[in-house]
Amino acid sequence: MRQDFLKGWPVLVVDDDLDHVGVVARILQYHGATIFIASNGYEALQILQRVHPRFILSDLEMPELDGWGLIRFLRQDPKRREIPVIAITGHNGRDERERVLQAGFYQYLLKPFTGVSFMRDLMTVLITIPELARDLVDEV
Image (cartoon, rainbow, N blue to C red; front, side):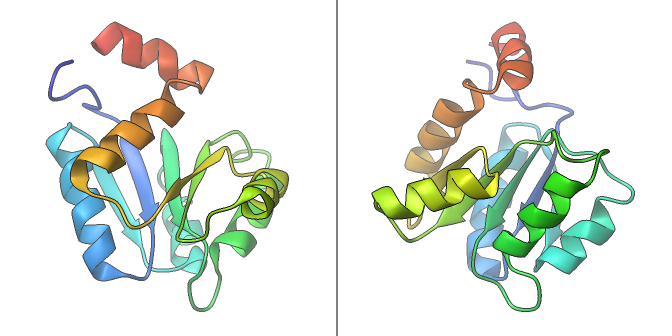
């Protein structure tokens, strides 16, 4: 796999934990993505007025507008409802998975993670999204 397989991909990362955002942003930038960062759902909605990301990574628990509220807004917006949104959560379990998927998230990644486990888990999700998988196959 080429190092820059996400080259040119705008990606929105929504999380209020700056340490977490820093790690995720560095990893995605290393692989070529252009990163946009929001610390809550309201900031994410402002960014989405000018950027159409290939996918969004969103924490579920944030102040002001959390990931649950953000996904409700996105799924009601005809221009943005098809953007794949991947939840990031520290909660694991069948009930949490069901709740995430029913809310409209494409899938979820579990925290905490390492750089290696993050990319492994993210790639596992991205290759299941048809419109992204096609581009990933072309880049690999």
